[in-house]
Image (cartoon, rainbow, N blue to C red; front, top):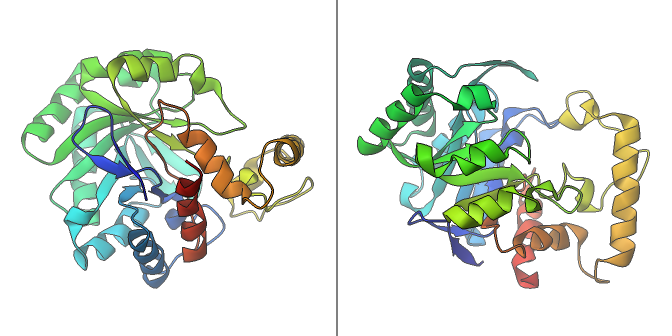
Length: 296
């Protein structure tokens, strides 16, 4: 495994992390604690130390799985990033909560679920610019940093072209930007990454496998079960992406190299990107993701 400094924080993160949206049940699979343990054990075995979760991956469900694991292992071996701003009511059903008082409640709920005294990176979760402009919220969060509940603040952008929030990150005390970035979606290269480099912000690239399309496992015409978030994508759009993936595989991926490893390494070769946070449903996918470092 390779490690990079996360922007101007003092955190050395593995260049491949573990995204944990799937633990909340919206990717077509309900996890058990044993399955989560196997994934996180394999991640640690391969030197991965970064976990990214959120308040609304289930109603703190993903956080609880991680918290149960952390309670039985060394918390200090892990860098845990989570998020705030939403409340989960059911699959694909959330409400938005952005007042300082509401977010403070969310923070305490996340700390309890994660069974920890502190969160390494606490991220605003897909907020609008209007929700972002909230001095009371950022003042409260700064106080929680001073109290030791939060080590660093971040912004998980709702889209990959939210340049206003990126440009204002340092002003509100945020040191990390999370953004959608992959071979099929390169919009952050235009403005967001330049702003991150100017401010020395850490960059976490989410959806680096383009919701699994860049795993190389799917062909045009692929369908997904109703409980899988990808079933919400229009079939025409899925097929367009998968045809493009076939073309990329033919023209860009070295023969004998797994497309998933190639796709993760492709993201990591951009100088602005600190780490990628692909999801994984089993230990074998953790191993495949970790192999991306061999291509750097």
